[in-house]
Length: 430
Picture 1: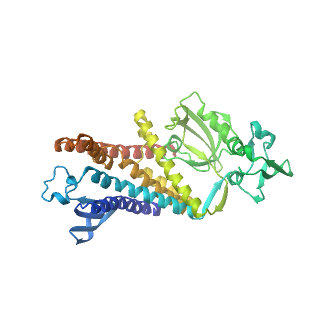
Picture 2: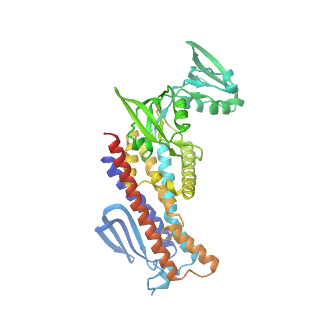
């Protein structure tokens, strides 16, 4: 319950910062601000300063800024302070400033998350497979204990210590014998890519809304068979699932001391045309603390934000090509609360990253060229720049109503997807 309350308050802050971006840019270009509200509904506190009414309202789900003359159908008396009478590029900057504020907030949150002491999750540093040239260095079952003199307890921790600038010395245990093996710098990239760690069939996380979640799978379930075929490692289990010729898979799982059978459909992976998934991820049994330097935190935050934006826009592109996948890839407040709870269980750092991701999603969605969204307004402004005159008020009004209707339908559909998914999971657990 606490996570849900924190999520609601955080969402309010994220939306308020979005609106504060619009507010700041509008002030910069001399647009008169009629009202700036933190929250919705009846105001708890309000006051007026420099012609602007400031409010703190009861419903903490964001806020809004009301600019004079922002509605194309408004009757304008003071053209100098009216939004619609500003140059097209002024309006583009004002519209973009809200999403841009969300981008800056996300970078800050990602930076804070990466700068804080992290509880890292990792695999055991034991070799499962060493193909190609790596087979001359590693053998299945090798256990890594140190890399270049630094003790390690995790697989990715060990891989991160391998140097590409000089030859490496790796301490391993092979069949009970301790030994040191050299790894040339020239083949480090090949080692990192091709050598695989031992990974069990324990479920680390179940992605909300996907088939495994609907079927009632839970964290720490152990998958024993796939379609009656025994599996002893993650790689074989994954191959059995994604390569099946059927449209569904039957899993035998162990949960605590009970054996359960779960059948679930395979869902096409939106990000891959040749793969189907059920929506589970690996369990990482090793935990250790890690403290990044400030430059490392800054680099990781920029990379993380950039990667998130690219992947989400690519996902939206794939959804346009495959609209039938909309329901299975669309989540509303229930899904958000579920993901928030999962992040909260992992600690403060994961919760901060989750809130940074929500800020980025708000930016990404608002920049879509849909009338009534910031992206739609920017689109109108660019059309005006090309035509050297704005679209007629009638056309703008019609397009805004269409955009509003689209958003309302999308919201209703998101609620429907949430509730139906939740009900399916509830029935699966009984």
